Length: 261
Image (cartoon, rainbow, N blue to C red; front, side, top):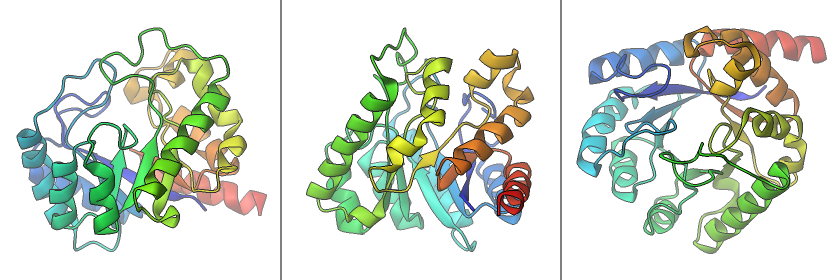
C-alpha cells in the first residue's frame, strides 16, 4: 500500500489550510494527529507554493519550520522539509528531518544537491513549469507526460551525478504545478510511463484545483476528489501520496487494496 505523507503547512497563505497551523504549537499538534491517523511521513513547509504565492525570506522560513520539526522528531515517522533553500534544508536536517522535498528539483539553490549528497538525505524531485508566481499562466505542452518524464529523467541523472544515491531519490510529476486540469489528469492516467524511470513516485492531488475544475468544488469541499485521485494514483503505481486528510485516504487505500488483492 502507498505510504502517506501528511501535509503540515506552517504558512499564512497555503491554498487550503493557510493560517490554520502558523503557530508552531498548533502545527506540532496537527502533525501528531496526522501521525496518529497513519501518516508515515510528515511534510513540514514554511513557504506556500500555491499559484501566485509571495516569496518568503530564508530567516522567516527557518523561524516557521525548525521548531515544528524539533517538536515532531520523537514520532515514529519520517520528517520531510518542503523547501527549495539549501540553508533551510540544512537546519531542518539538523533538527531531525531526513527528507528534502524540493519543488524546484534542486534547481532553485545551487547548494542543494551537494548538501543532500553530503548529509545522506532522501530527496523528492518535482516537476514544475516556471515558478510558483507564474506557473499557471497559460501552461502548454506538446505531450505533458513525455515532457515531464524527460525533465524528471534529467534531474534524476543530475542528482546522481552530484553524489545522491539513486535509491534515495523519489520523483514527483508536480500535479498542479504549471499544468491545466487536462494536463493533471493525463499525468495521473499515464503514471506508468513515469514509473519506467525506476524510482518511487510521490504524487500530491490533495484538495487541488483540478478537482474543482471537474465539479466546481471549493478547496474545502474536495475530499471525495482527493480520495478518488489518490486511490487511482496508487493503483497506477504511486508509492507515496501527499495528502491533508490522512485518516480518510488511508481508509480508502486499505479498502481498495483489500478489494484488489
